Length: 164
Image (cartoon, rainbow, N blue to C red):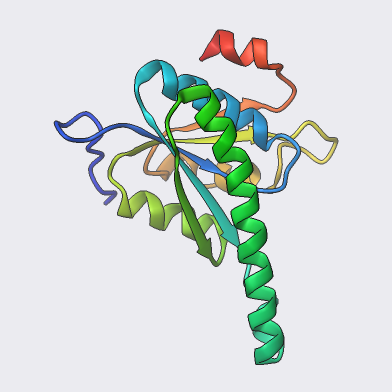
């Protein structure tokens, strides 16, 4: 049974969970969630997951270098999107970097933080569909522990602001 959400209780604040990846449309989810959080007095949590599946087959020294490079890249990406959130909300977002499978790490973080109330994703605009994360999560959407907001990747800042 999923952990009870606590964002409406005294001393708690609703959090929007953003999955920060390298997709073109990621900034659409960040923009909408930050705009919405700014209007509702909510907090943003940015999650960057580093895939470690290929690392186990490397020599230890090479794996350490790959991990360090992945952490550096993850922090740079979170810095960039964190600045965007700060500009929109005037609040510093929470930052989380995890290693593992994206779907597993999303669920673990939601279970650990009872203030996370909404997962925000952006849908891809390409011919290949909405993206692997949305496609994967859609299979478990009926049993997912929190609502999932999917932001169309083709919307402009003005259109997203109007809906925030």
